[in-house]
Image 1 (tube, helix red, strand yellow):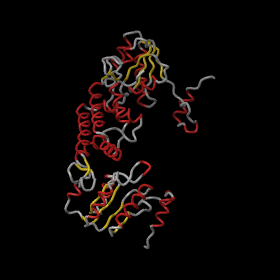
Image 2 (cartoon, chains in turn purple, red):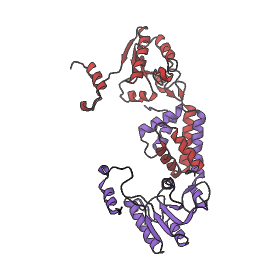
Image 3 (spheres, chains in turn cyan, brown):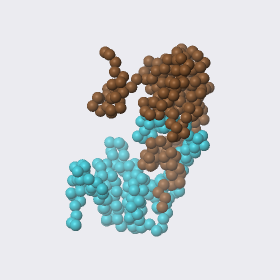
Image 4 (tube, chains in turn purple, green):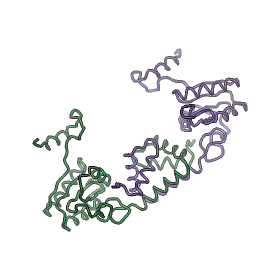
Length: 199
Length: 199
């Protein structure tokens, strides 16, 4: 027999399509929807559709925006000589929260991963190189993730940018602040040793 | 500065309203929505609205249904002399999966919890008692959760039903199948000892 009614099954299946949502969570969320106010559910549904319809990539830096240029690219007070390359739009938020970086960004929306069919075209590295060639940029800070794909992407971009005579840096790796040496994995520890500095 | 665009913020907030979804998960889900096909997002939104609009409580047993009576209440092959009382519609699915129970259900949509303002009226225990008084029911199986609220609810229902001369049972408690004695908490262990049987 069918345990859920057809309408409920459709909601469970919709939630299951989301990343990290298993069958149990999907049915918990679906049942919760039934307890919400009708207007709340309609508001939620409208928000999903509207976001998907309105939000697109910034023409310049591929950050997410509802305009042609994102709020960072539109901000004339930002330092246009610094460009930070990140994998994901959410990485921008992490960096912005430090309030330490005032340059521009470029979002790759991924990292090089030939086995998954992600090459330089998918990351639109040609658009990135065009920015670098246009001049005005003094330093490229590569903030891809510290893993195999992120490392490969960083090296690829560094090679291309070096030919243009730009300063290329990558964010530092080591022990996280508040972290405990005892629980550090050997790769982090090895990176932390490499990154040691005189004090 | 505002990190998310207004449309994205609305989606993040919508997801945050769901139970068990924290800020990190909400933003992960919101970003995923942006990567979905437009039609998929519209389909998902429509499913939410439709489920909330169509699904209601079965007039008889308070199970969720899109009709006036749920599929179990409509099924003439079910044993009308057995009534199983559960807290949540999902509990029905757990019991149905055993394929061992062929009676009817009554869904409380909660458990007695005076501190949270949940009394007999909220659980519509009058509707349950009306069923019991109507006759035809030989046994009431109480399958509320094994915790303080579930126990209190079970006792309350048992008292009311006993006056009608019905057989009242409660599902068994003890070690879960596949469970390990070593990891059993003392309450489960104590219930398991109480529930011991000759072999």
